[in-house]
Length: 303
View 1: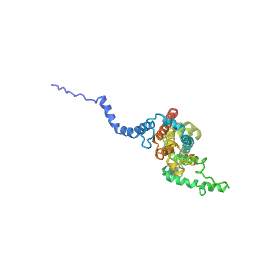
View 2: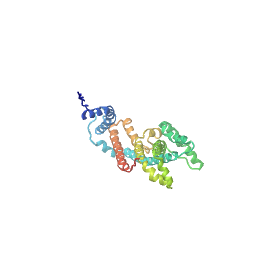
View 3: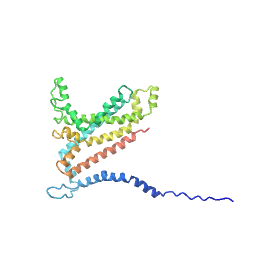
View 4: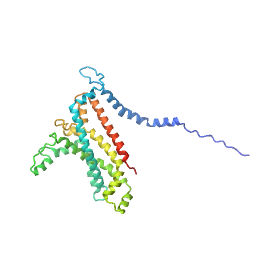
């Protein structure tokens, strides 16, 4: 007599329960993202639409008046121009220098680890230490740069005290500090490239310049995109370096946008005006990110 075994059907979780499980997993991270990123951004936009509460008078809704007032604020216009000039000069220089350093230390040579460490150390130093180090170069009478000028009988320059040179002195410090940091990303990307491509290029007789232009540079495009976005963010987020070296002077010649926002908010206590400038800064950064993703990401090659 044969026996028939009845197998109970396996109960599969429903689709909605799986989706709920997924949402519960991301809920802690989503909560922190909304609380510490999106809520402050929305609160900043909302505060920029009100006047400052002064002399016991409460703040009232003024619409876009704080934004129109920025057009008549000469210091804001100068800070914005200084920051755009700062970004246009420091970003290409820092990225190019980082790429050259990465190509240099990617080869097999003696003391390679020592050279890589020397390139990377500036990005590890705190900003106050970097400022003190560069003040040794920029000091009007005793600085190293003026000592070098004296060897050629050239007059001394007040590097941080002249309106025409203060901003460029800050740019030099930023390039020196950030190039080593970006070099690490380029070096990691270069070492991910398949070495058989280099061997094939050598067999075909391709020069190093041709191999870089046709093989390495296209494969480095994702890293370049990442580095450019980070460099752009850093160029508009700089404030500690300005405080340590020039305090925005002389005559606002080294005043940058975030530093002016800081002074407006915590020195002049004009929070709505600072919120309006912060919104302008966020729009600029969002436009830069969208522009780079739309233009450069299409040219990126992934292995």
